[in-house]
Amino acid sequence: MTNKRIFSGVQPTGSLHLGNYLGAIRNWARLQDSFEAIYCVVDLHAVTAPHDPTEIRRATREVTAGLLAAGIDPKKSIIFNQSMVAEHAELAWLFSCVAKIGWLNRMTQFKEKAGKNREQATVGLYVYPVLMAADILAYKATHVPVGEDQKQHLELTRDIAQSFNLAYNVDFFPLPEPQILGSATRVMSLRDGTKKMSKSENSELSRINMTDTNDQIVQKIRRAKTDPNPLPANIADLKARPEALNLVSIFAALQDTKIDEVLDKFKGQGFSTFKQALIDITVDHLNPIGDEIKRWTQEPEEIDSVLADGAERASTIARPIIQEVHQLMGFLGAGRRS
Image 1 (cartoon, rainbow, N blue to C red):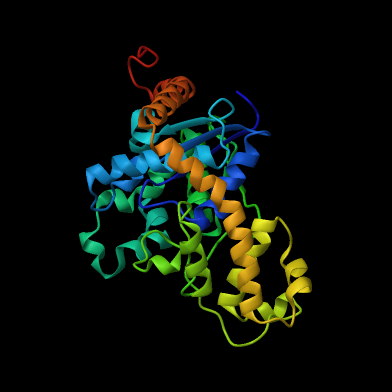
Image 2 (cartoon, rainbow, N blue to C red):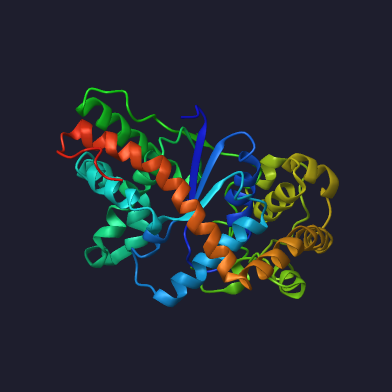
């Protein structure tokens, strides 16, 4: 096993947007040159809520196209959809016999997603973090690129790994380290700078999709919520203005620069000037990616081939790890499965 293996995943729900790209996917493409990289379209996670099966299939292909268009090379990285590798679901069950109810009760994301209808939420939504732990540890991943909102789930993954190791008196699973990268690890809504940019928000004006046309990008940025004040000269003043901070953070991330360098350039200027500059850099950056996504989605057989090849390569890594887990847990017939 390599001493540096990275794993991460993205749900096939809705279209990929700028937040997915800047917060995760662009970094994945960069990391594939320094890690053994495994990237997963997590369709098992996507069915924890009511869903349209036809839409899951469409979105799985579109998300895969987005990964490929953003520079993730299937020859360098493993790209697959989760449901094609049975070891994920199996290890999730085994980990559910290690994880503690109290740990899951502390998961804030379940509380947010379940809302007031907690009793009507699915068991799958509740144990979602256990499956996430299985996703990572099925490959003994040492590093996981995560956004700030996923750090709690990664801590649970570390807790589960440590609990398993202690229960069976082994040093078997690593404790994966978070990788938090870039100027815009958490891109916020264009309509509300206090909420994360999301596929689930009703207003299309809240997000820039990776397949948006130039006209759509122009409209969304021009209508993005701001405030009447000019851009400040320092980050401390910017932090008190969430919508302004979000737009400046997006600009900095797209230009691969620091926020204070953006403020040096635009301090004292109004948002009409800054938004035009943001439009220009966003269009220049997303146009070629959007074109590639459209090209890939017109070739679904090619996407399916990439996923099938990735699933076989992923299984080749995960299968012997699960067989070792069987032996450690005392199952008869451990190691007999091909």
